Length: 259
Ligand SMILES: [Zn+2]
Image (cartoon, rainbow, N blue to C red; front, side, top):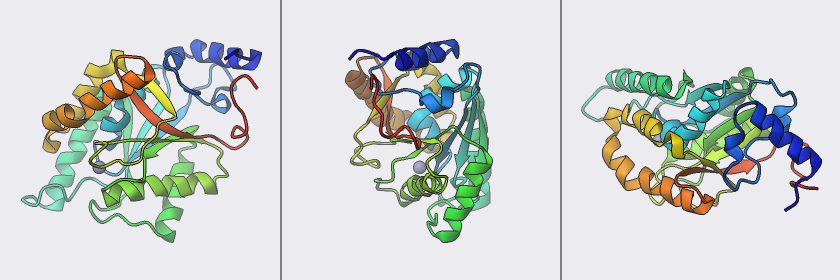
C-alpha cells in the first residue's frame, strides 16, 4: 500500500522519538497519530492488569520498548494477588507479590500502582467503574493497555471491562489496546490487530517474568509465553512478538493509512 505524506510524516516522527522500530512489524499502526502531535512529546502509557505479573507476561516487551524510548509507563494492578496461595494469609501474599512486582517493574522501567481491589473477588459495578475512570484519567494517558475481557479468569474479565468503560466515558480520547495472557487456557477469542516485535527484548522480558517467583514462572513461560511469543512472531514476520487488539481514539476511527 502506498503511504500518504501524512503517514510518512507520522513514521518520521516515530523515528525521531526513537520508537520507529515498533513499526517494523507489519502493524496497522504501532502508535497512534494523536499521541505524536509533537516530535518531542513523551507519552504516558498506563497498562492495567488484574494481578502482579499480568502486564509483564502479557506485554512486558512492548512496555520495556516504551520506557527505553523515554515514555512514562505505569502498571496499574487491580489487586495485589492476595489469594494466590491458600497456605499464606492475604497480607503475607500481598507483601510477597508487591515485592516481586517492584523488581519486575524496575527491570522494565515501569512504575507500579495498585487499585485496591481483592484478588479472586474483583468487582465490576457502578462505583468501581467510576473509581477506575477517575484513576485512569488522573494519569492523563495517551494510551491504555488492558487485558482482553474474554478470559476464563473472572478477575481478567473485570480488568478488561473497567478500562473499556473509562475509555467510553472519556469520549475515547486515548487509545485502548487489549493484550492476551495464557492464550488457550485463559485468554480466548483473541484476534490481534497489531503486533510489536520484541525479539531484542526477550531476555529482559523473561527476567521480568521470572521475578514473579511465586507464580511458577518457568512452567508458565515454557508452556505459554515462549510458544506464544514465537507464534505471534510468525504471524508478524519476526522472531518474537506481542499481539494486541487496538481500539482507536475518537477522530481516528474512520481513517486508514494512505487515505
Ligand atoms: Zn492474572
